[in-house]
Image 1 (cartoon, rainbow, N blue to C red):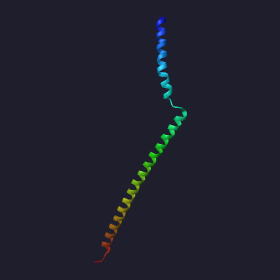
Image 2: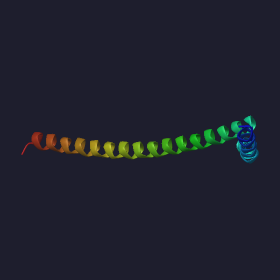
Image 3: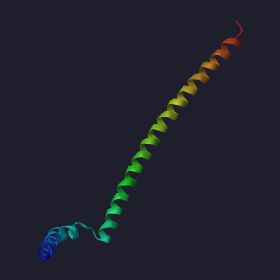
Image 4: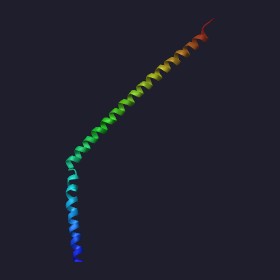
Length: 88
């Protein structure tokens, strides 16, 4: 039984020796976490700005198209009224 306990302790120590340093090196410091969050926020803000710009462009084009169509229909209606009211 003693031999099994010693072997278990040795195996546990060896696994900690192999895994421990890599686990400690892989963790970021709180300062690095804040930097990463700042970079992610910056990128998200850029993406939002691009989406807003694209939406504004599309809206502008749609308004322009709608305005032109309304002007054409108004002109068409005015011609119809003129034709109905013209003597002759």
